[in-house]
Length: 197
Image (cartoon, rainbow, N blue to C red):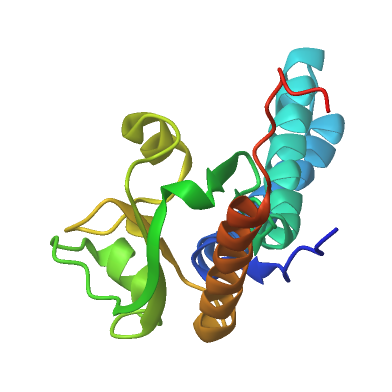
């Protein structure tokens, strides 16, 4: 059985989550300090106030942990039968039969970028990324746009853009697995269920 390709981390996720890391850590520390302070100060020493501060601090701490672990869970990987796009909250499988081509494109979004978007995308602007040109998405586009970052979607064709460290290696893996898939389909003999000889 053919081994899967390597995991190529989605750098856009790493960048987005890295920006959250400091804010969530600071927020968690602030709420835990307020919770500790609430134990000592009479106006804040009610159980409700303490519980609210503890829940808020714990939630911020969970988001901080998510910002640490999330980049490891966001990657694209080639398998013998499909390409897997894994994100911290969603996994997408794309069969090679849907892939028209994998090609390098320059990442220059046509839409107007807000200040925060420019800040996130600055390291990627003008860089080469791998585009998977698809003949259709495996699920509805609206559903995909809900789960995936908007800048994984190209402006002028149906497909996905992958911001990875080594786009050439990913491109070679896609081409290699697609070729093997085509060969295995051609070489597989058709079976006649009525022929018992």
